[in-house]
Length: 270
Image (tube, rainbow, N blue to C red; front, side, top):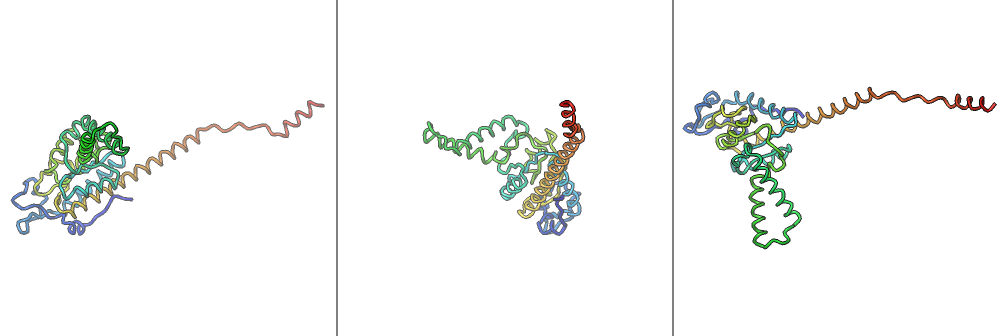
């Protein structure tokens, strides 16, 4: 695989260029706005294009170095898309609600994940012996509640190395926590957002389903390319180690020819 490519035409077809109503704009987005049509801001795709490539390369590099990518989008129209895209490339997601301290208070979140794993195990084995019907019902409700918020990160095993966020104003808490920890953020910034709040802003429509699908597929493909590069690099390292070991291995000792040994025995007998 290679870093995913796209065209301006594909961006237009996905509706990436449509911003919000002009009265809802953030002045910090002025450099990325091409103009207005029917009082709707139009995003300058000539500027979005290279910024999206830069963001994809950053995600790819993280994956190529064995890093973890966290997809974040809790708005309704993005929930299923984000989950499917993260699972496609073996990464992690938050698509229901961002819990305060999800990054900055990871130890507490990890305790909740441990609890979820225990409840999942109980459910899988139907291990409810000794519990009353009411207690079993409460345990199942607790499991469902934890699953909604933690399913996408239960196997993450620690803080992510980069965030991919759709709708940065809505996910302001996630962006703030990542910034506090020095975790880079790729953010889709619509005309109502502040692009200076994220490390790698990508000006674009953050509401249309087709646009969200467009971004997620590209990021997912970039991750897969990075993972493939990591596997190739590790394969090369293993081959190099094996070759080096073969070169350092001492040559086996030569045995005396059988004929010579037989002749010596005959001479001794005489």
